[in-house]
Length: 407
Image (cartoon, rainbow, N blue to C red; front, top):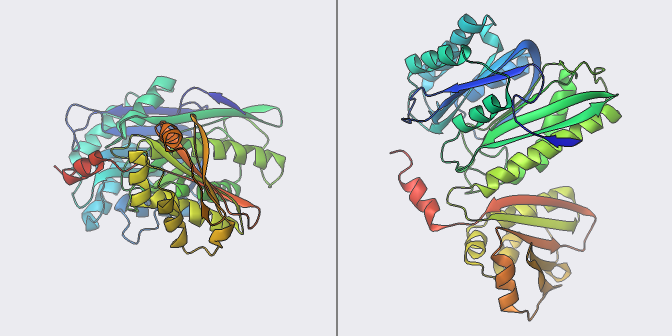
């Protein structure tokens, strides 16, 4: 596998465009379109929140139908959640506009929205945006990058990634973009992510890979403990690489899944690091746990604790906060087996050893925790399973951003 440039337009046959539709924001792009002339098989995962946005329900039907997909239309600013029949009508009218402009069935058009909950989308602006973007589709890497910027809300940086890999001697490309900064919590964490590949693969296997990879990537990040109404991850495969079709879980499938794991991990970590108001990435790695589920539960509890996040912000090696979060996580363990370390590019320091607090160099710990990314490393000494979760520190700016988000 090789890391390459670009995002959603890196794979063969995919085009993208964006425009300023003024859905909510002024003087910035706020709509994006990703398109493949050739039909794509699709896979997806969606929010676990019972309150699901209209666009989520629309896309769930498209993915579960098994019908080909040609396009994804995304808007930022308004989430189209809690919008009743009018919200569903907005999805249909957006898809109808793509059908008219690009001559593909409306049922092959996925839609996604991000932004304020409870506001109705201005359909006339959506349709006008589709018309603009359909006329400016481009397969350049720059077009993909521009699309990744158009879907941002409170994000401070755009997020995209692409890799190439070989399937039976044929080069295949996988690329993607995502957005996410706030209202992020595991169980299909808050985000929008769109992945494209020129791989030829059976739909069931594509879905299996997505469903499994999301458990250790997007479901392992948290910013604020809130699971969104709009979480959507879509992967489109248009078979344009010409590889021998993947029809079983052999080596070719494993190669693809490894590439997918890399791209999703990269995008997930970028979202965690870009959490609203964040000043650093906060990582928790739990090793030698009794089960995979325990490792996931423990690591997510550590990065999800507000007190732990505040300690990371303050560069305070208050290890008791992290142990406390582990203790109420629901995983059973013996605290007398646990070792806990702080790590960063500045070094590593052990602060807790099998039930006993250690006397450690506070100045050294402070230096380690001042890095842009800090890891809490926990050795459970109870098994062989491990997991990593990602979050961010809790800063003053988080409250400022969310206190006036709607306005």
